[in-house]
Length: 256
Ligand code: 13P
Image (cartoon, rainbow, N blue to C red; front, side, top):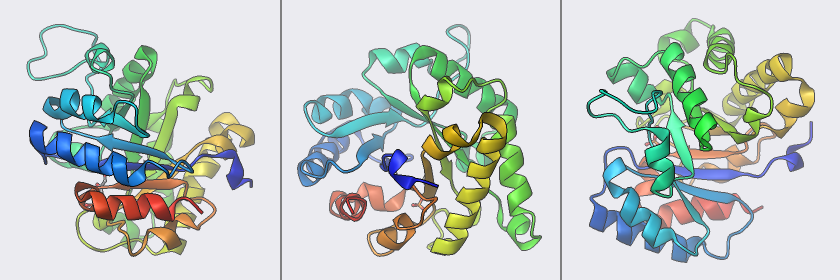
């Protein structure tokens, strides 16, 4: 397997944090700190209301802006939802889909994750598709089956051509916001299972070219070792992405 075929992507997921004025300052600071670090792509996924301020602050820098969800319909009576074309027109390039917090708290299923992914790709957005096992599944020894099944269901009907715009974020649910990190070997192994599943679905070349991130309590202290693993092509970072200096250290660790 050839890791050099893939560009590392370090993405922050701000979740429900930062007002627009805070976002403006944090994007500007992150951009200034990471400006010379061109060895990976840098993305910040911000709340919808922060998008305008974030896009403005990121102009002319290496930082790209993402959203944290998108609806699957193009328009209509879907109170509180946001469409892919709305995001695009606001300057958004990436969107997180299927985050475990959406699956846990907002009824997201593999079926709706699949629909949202298709809508986002059709509109021209890049997708960061999140999946991962819960603690009980890891303890029961069925992690591999769970992530393989999620990969197949979430990507059902998505063409090889569209896969160029899909990043997969492996996020073990038990590691999110808990301070518990998967060991580098666990992260590597499970990202490898996802890659093997992609190889079955799309062939080895596409699987080798697909970026698979790890997410779950990644921070400036553990990023280098996680990112050194052959199957780990980046990170999706929650808490540590809210502090530009810490996030920049993770981006720095990805330059090697
Ligand atoms: P933490 O980095 O805060 O554990 O969050 C990870 C995550 O959910 C990123 O999407």
